[in-house]
Length: 70
Image (tube, rainbow, N blue to C red):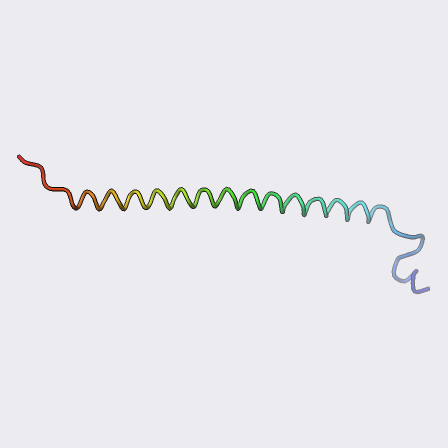
């Protein structure tokens, strides 16, 4: 009787197993996409950091330059 109360009559439901497999695949797909996006974000962050460093170096050079002769 306990099995009937819990819904285990006749063994595992194939629809439930199919849904579980579908959800597991979806989780794997999302984890893969997350890894790809994090890697892309790391590349973009490094490029932005490099650009900021280059801009700060250019502004330092401009402040140290001597005025042009007129």
